[in-house]
Image (cartoon, rainbow, N blue to C red):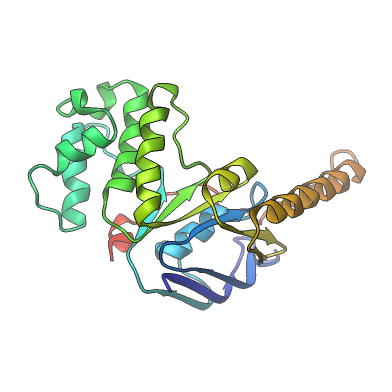
Amino acid sequence: MSVELRAVRKNSLGALEDPLFDGLDISAASGAHVGILGAQKSGKSTLLRMICGTEPVDDGLVERTSRVSWPIPLNSFLIQTSSVATNIRFVGRIYGISDNEFPRRIAELGAIADFLNVKLQKCPRFVTARLAFALGVGIDCDLYLFDERIIPPDKDFREHAVKVVERLKEQRGLIVATKIPAEVEAHCDSVYVLENGRASYFPNVATAIEHFKELMKAAQKRKTSEAAGGPDNDDEGGAAEIGDIDLIGAAL
């Protein structure tokens, strides 16, 4: 087993709100390619942070028996006033990597070698996205976590990124938490669907996608039947969908 969550409870930020997760069970075996489908604000990013260990659970157990990445393509830890190479060395030191060729390898992985000695704030916008992707998949882990999309939405980089991910999938496991059915259809062998704070497991991807679409249709029907201007009852209680991460915690 690579990662397992058993009877996990995660409270919402609002004291009077229902818990974000309650009795959540999820597992990903070594080498598995697992999708997690959830509606917007269903707690997908929070779940990934719990999986990698940078978000505590309020109850239950999270067991990891392998190295788990941070949620890719998180980039809030990058220092805009430092060069691309300095940023790569910083992350490398956290993970105990002292190889002098590490910055060059990561830059080539992200197709940004021409920007190695340029401060990130002076680079084209695509450099940050590619750097975040390359660092995420370039650190040696057993299980890689992806938030929303696996392939970066960069047309000039897409073909290269697809090859990188295909090589990764041949040797390592992954989890992608997303609201986009096409993502799990393209990359996953099994799927969990988030619903009412729990996760239903589907060994068949097509069945999972159909179930998720039915849930979305039902949710839309409920919304349209609500009184105009009423509160959005599908909110997860204010839990952040995108947030910062403690890289040191993920490294441990």
